[in-house]
Length: 363
Ligand SMILES: Cc1c2[nH]c(c1CCC(=O)O)Cc1[nH]c(c(CCC(=O)O)c1C)Cc1[nH]c(c(CCC(=O)O)c1C)Cc1[nH]c(c(C)c1CCC(=O)O)C2
Image 1 (cartoon, helix red, strand yellow):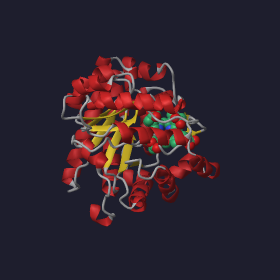
Image 2: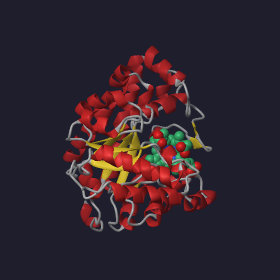
Image 3: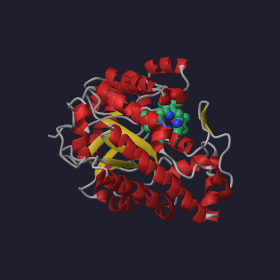
Image 4: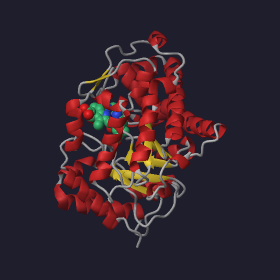
């Protein structure tokens, strides 16, 4: 598989994801290709959001923009796409104006009949696979390429709410009034996620991340009941399908945002190599919870990038000390605790990268 691509020159991310010690922590940021970058805004001024996702040459260009700008400082690219392409593959209409909007959300359990019963990911999402292959080539081995999908619970919530929501009133109505139908839908989404991730890995993704952005909206026992089974289904399904197809396995990351009290069960049961953490948990505490076999990713508050250089340096130093436990960078991928937000000065992000390089070294 890798034979068709240029050799990888920087494998820090992959080594840390496998739990190894590294000279310094690899670093990238969630949503690194996005609206805070003027070069991204330029592309978006001429093309719709999903048009960029669906046009491999444009998706490749915006994926590479942060790699080009922060050359030598950034250790991974993440393919430009969105978690909501999976609901689209299931047959739902999704607009981005500028927040996600579903004109025809799932109102009650009978509505699942509107979804495609069989999803051919190559037909519906082949454009993502093409973008991945094209980006792998364009990266020329500079850094590894990350593929991703949304977690079934987060996607379920979008498909039912019809967009973002503060209370998740509709999604919770489903969970608690129709638990069996909800679980069936969550597993249907998980099946599509499995094929989608396998297709991304076959196309050249060197690590894959599952974003459960709304994990923290569930009580720990409800996370265990509704989200965790579908997350396990994804990790085990991806690995067994890769084996069956003779495709080498890649590290898998789960970002269960806000589900910090569920970290021990996630580490033991979910089947991921890396767990992403937000800034509401101390890194050294997360390390104690997961033991030394699982890698961690995170976790600076993205809001710190508005705080100026002094605050960024102080907090990155503190984060590094907490992750390293005073010793070495091991099994840790530096990142923010959630996506970078619009309005951040790209030069302040550069400073974040420089501070990680300085303070995360093994000493
Ligand atoms: C919940 C979620 C979505 N999308 C995603 C998540 C999970 C991560 C998270 O919790 O932030 C994931 C995502 N979305 C995007 C990426 C691309 C890769 C990257 O650079 O990280 C990734 C990994 C591009 C995007 N997806 C979106 C943009 C901005 C839209 C634009 O260009 O107009 C980008 C760059 C739009 C989007 N897409 C989504 C929302 C809520 C929005 C609008 C608000 C916002 O920007 O945060 C759904």
